[in-house]
Length: 192
Image 1 (cartoon, rainbow, N blue to C red):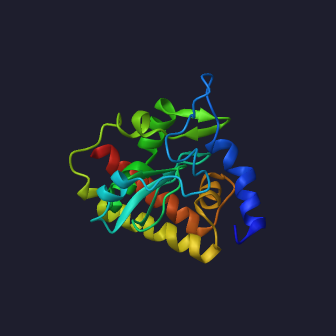
Image 2: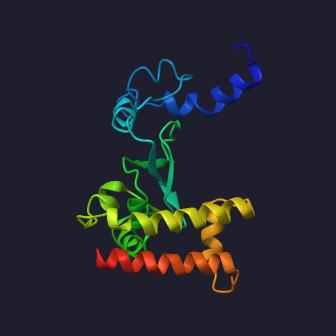
Image 3: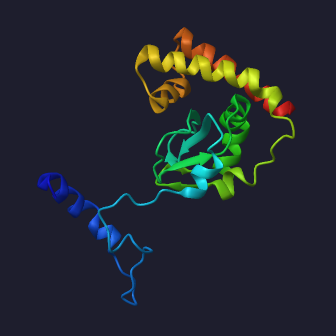
């Protein structure tokens, strides 16, 4: 309340969602969210307990035009719109970033408008994972490292990087190398 302008924004944008009711005039959200609508929504103790011993985790936005996974610090506070997988190896990142997995996800996932809506129960849990992902670690690490270099050098995020990656008119050497690494990774995933 010490910052009335900020509080007004939260009241206008958060309160209606947190205090909405169903047809029976019952709150849709569980306690304490309707009563304390201004507080941070959820700490997700099960998630943070699961990833506590990990240095990093694999994440992907729930909805997006591009399939793009990233390894990030497990110390982040994760948005509800971010899929967090308790996987920390570059091989797992390479496996899920592969064209093989993208085709699977687009076949078994759903969409929001024209974007892929990645649902772990449909896209990840049903995907036939190879028994040995460690073999993919070297390729995944090289791929992720090169992709990070591109993003830092160009000050671009994943979406812009993959927009250029999929653009047939894009001929820059860094993107071509990423494509080559992607093909190599795809071949290793198919073999695994």
